[in-house]
Length: 254
Ligand code: BTN
Image (tube, rainbow, N blue to C red; front, top):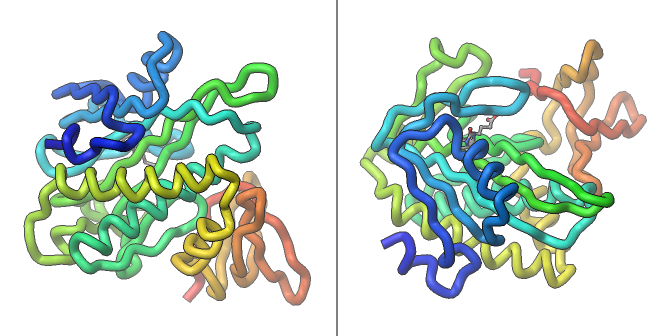
């Protein structure tokens, strides 16, 4: 069903499914090192060592959610990889909106939120050779029909599409929708057309015009979030002076 739904996209060629795996990103990296093709999809029902950013865990029981890694081999310099994360975030939010009518917002750099609670996270990993990208792995965890609950995570509130929409959601249909949207933006990106991607991403930004606090290394920076720039940095206004934030954990100050 997933394979036929992905006909005519880069993802139709090689779908790798595992009932249990340590991490779909780790398996996708191994496959990439062994020479697997652009568009390889790795899906699993269960991860024993699902990974998030900053060494965090990603939790999900079997049969409820989506845990997917996408292997790409774009001919781009390493400093353009973040655009692929943006494209996946857009595809997840537009796919969810099309299918169930909820509107997820993107929290820089790689999270999706609905109603102030996290619904999905993206973990992007890549390898380079001679300053060019050899492969990129985009890992997505999407809470479709289950979320871990705030006690399990502690760092941020979590939710699921089912909790928000009030009904069980078909993971296969949703994945096909997300990947078809992704394919469209990926084609644009490869054609050099990124304007629409930036515009749409910025219009879905959860942080836009919010007062934020960013933990970046040992520093805490406060300001008002404005936009992301061409290098994927978050631009914040600190008392009239613009600052570029290239990495960090952001919280909104209420
Ligand atoms: C984050 O929120 O910090 C990113 C979470 C990414 C989780 C997904 S689940 C599929 C893929 N495999 C992993 O081990 N991680 C990503």
